[in-house]
Amino acid sequence: MANNTDVNINDENAPQVPKHIAIIMDGNGRWARRRGMPRVAGHNAGMKALKEIVRICSDMGVKYLTVYAFSTENWKRPQDEVTGIFKIMVYYIQKELRELAEKNVRIRVLGNWDAIPEEAEKSMEHALAETEKNDGMVFNIALNYGGRTEITDAFRKIAAEAAAEGKSPEEFADSITEELIGSAMTTAGMPDPDMIIRTGGEMRLSNFLLWQCAYSEFIYTDVFWPDFDEKELKRCIEEFNSRHRRYGGL
Ligand code: IPE
Ligand code: IPE
Ligand code: MG
Image 1 (cartoon, rainbow, N blue to C red):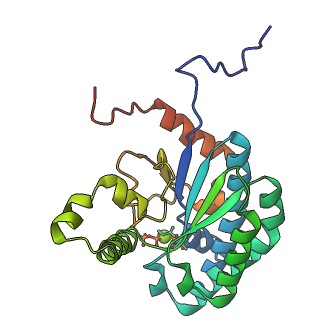
Image 2: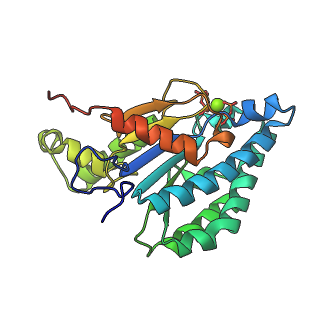
């Protein structure tokens, strides 16, 4: 006899694990300041939280996990903080790559990561190549990512292809569809995020997934990113499950 903790897959009211979870990992700096530590210590603690959340999401059966690691606007920060963030990222990838690969996780990078420090670029290239054939959870790292830049680049790409094909202005205009724009985004072929979690108490997107968020459920928590754990993730998923997604219908 099934015990009452078994998930009934035929029950449409049973909790659903979102297929695509996106996270704005915010609050590292404030976490550190509260402890009288430098901001970089907050980023380091944030990487530890990320490591756990990636493992938990993969075990839960999440298909896509997208995390906002560094925005196109974050270059405005002091040089030593920027350098520190990338150093911590390189260390994380080096340390975790084997486990991620064993878990069949596929790492992808969203954003213009050619513009990041060379060491970080190399380590990302290595991580991508090592996990390229994996078909488990897709782990998207949004690095030097900005939603407006992504949309702008997509339009450039579409225009360049139309020019190469010798399309007339009318043919070009007619060819533009939502599908075409979606396929020119860095998330081409992936489903839109079901929910976007933002830690750290702010209620804004800060240029994250502007095109893809059309029908995402937004979930905000005051918890600073380094303190975000399995319990808090499960609470967010519960909140997601309590929402009624109508997509404009009734
Ligand atoms: C998020 O934490 C990490 C990055 C933006 C790289 P913050 O560094 O923004 O932390 P707060 O918002 O200052 O607390
Ligand atoms: C958003 O956080 C970017 C990342 C989490 C990487 P920010 O801390 O940069 O956002 P703002 O400045 O509060 O909008
Ligand atoms: Mg912040």
